Length: 570
Image 1 (cartoon, rainbow, N blue to C red):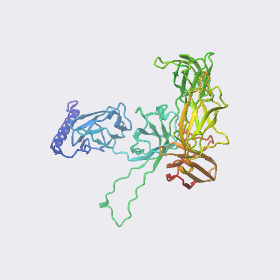
Image 2: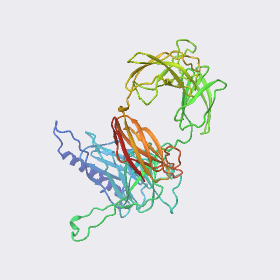
Image 3: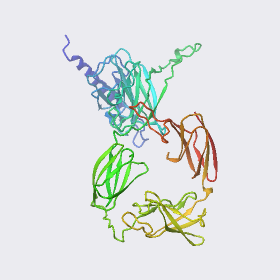
């Protein structure tokens, strides 16, 4: 009668012998002599125990032998097990081998895939072993289905890289996708995207699956608030993974064996909204001045400063408030409310490191900065931005002079203050117009405007040269579309930033004038809800992001050239 435990002792002894042989094999391998070429090759797998692709697997560990000493690189995150195993396997190195110890949670008749990705590197040079996989089945055969796809950004259409985890969930009784699935449920299979945004779910059972991709920054295989997500609104069925064909055994006189081509499932990833509207941060920037930033745009914010008079402005993206106290102090207490969900009481105090502002002292003046550079566009206006709201909001005041270099004659100019009281546009008269290609000296006269603290502006001097029409190129885009939706056509610079935007329905000629010589791209957003902006998707509502299209080629704009393009949108 066999003594209890002798089977496991025998198996353990085999593993030790296996590791010893692997170590001796590695010692016999000839390396580069001292001073020779640098080793850039990754470690090579020379053996596995049990064998890779084993069936009827019942061990509690497996080992992988390499041709050199190896180290682990964040194996806890880089090694991915599909289907997931809880608790996670323990991964260690022993000589020239990696040993993976398993718990007692293996399911019967199940194929397990261990993706090592970049978890193993050689000891000396750190060369990474990429995309090695070990697979086994606890049943009589390996599951043989697969799903392939790619995850791209829903707006830029650029690939989303390796931080993206793709999960497959089994469909139960043809049900609709459960709302809480990606937040709470354990996926049936998982993988990660490569650097090209491509993914491959392999060794799957024949079943229908929901696919969800998550920018899984905390590696918990769940969708958390604030993480980007992509999903397919319809369940997908995996296909049979291609099997290698033994061409030597195929009769050339017979028709070739056709293998079913695996479809590529394209998933569009978008950022999810924060859990709710909230104050992101707030602080006093100077004595009597403060800012409040929120996670989402505000609608019509209201501020109560406990009876203290204040002025505030909302920025263009509507997610930041700029606040000024009419009677500056080192601290303030505010109640902020808004229809977007805000109702907060905020207490702020000026840092002791801030320079004290001496309000009322003649040495402290209103600050202004130009919204133009040494090159002023001939089709643009010269404007100034002030550090605090002006008393003359909405008014036109005489406050500047301009001198042309060629004749040194000064001409009076007016300042048109915007309704917010923060921006002033330089306005000339009908008898004097700026000439293209000419250089000018602009002088902002002192104390021509005053802010809410009764401070006058400094005397400021700026120099600029007016550009010429020949310095720019133009794009004429003939848009042809039979779509009922409004189309938002955006011109992007080489960094992907929107330079100009036009809207159209149906066939229309769109003009993009006054373009600096550079490379541009054209993008169209199908504005289905006609709200004049791109709307990202909503996972809980099962709504994909609005459709985005890119023109087939980039446009190289040259100075003094007109470029005509036609885009048929379908």
